[in-house]
Amino acid sequence: MKKALVAALFAATAFTATHASAASVTLTTTADGHVQTFGGNDVDTAGTILAITQSGGLIRNGIFEFDLSSIADTATINSVSLTYTNTRFVSNTGNNPASVQLYTYLGDGAVTIADYAASANQVVNTTVPKGGLAGDTETFAFSSVADVQSALAANLLTVRMETDSFASFQIASLENTDYAAASLTIDYTTPTPAVPLPAGLPLLAGGLGAFAWLRRRKG
Image (cartoon, rainbow, N blue to C red; front, side, top):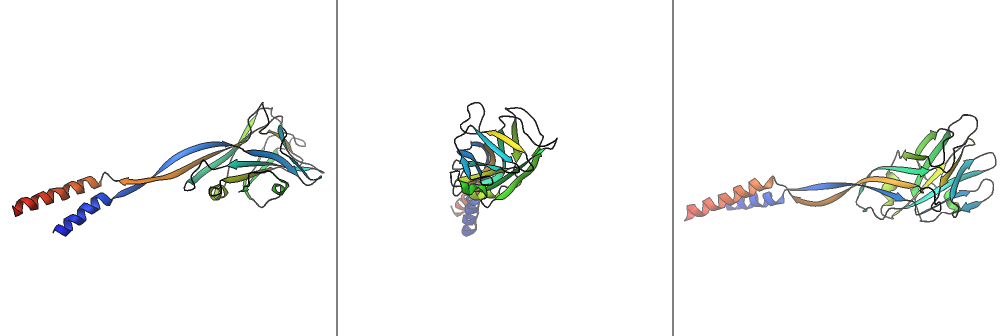
């Protein structure tokens, strides 16, 4: 009987629950630039705009580096979106919308010519209307957060922006003093330490009562 009561008391204190804490963070790019190989190799990380374009003789891709160290490695990434600001209207031929393609991969904190065609996973494939004004912002939700999840351990993520069909964007960079640089908004959850469940308290109280009854009976 005593052994059973001891087991009951242990069970009362052993019932625990693991909780998850939800959070959201917006991270500004730590390094950015545009890179090109078609039309001559070039890397520009000092300009106030990122020129993302594709034409018959010129292709430039925009590169954004992000530091994820503020998010715990044990976090679970739930959703990610990228926001950028145009510094002029979006251009394209005719009335055609301009394509936006975003790719993600593990970063190294720097923008180099290797980022032009680094192996990556596409997370956005959409279009935006031609036109608009300087100061217009665009936000795109990622279709996959797998690369962001994987990048938590190394803390660095790269996002590459491409377009096609003669479209052209000019986006505010880190050096721009008029408009905000690109940012990532990441929603995630982190596990919190397990705590005793309130449901175990009645069992504990019952066990203590049984012990008291046994003592009285022996007396």
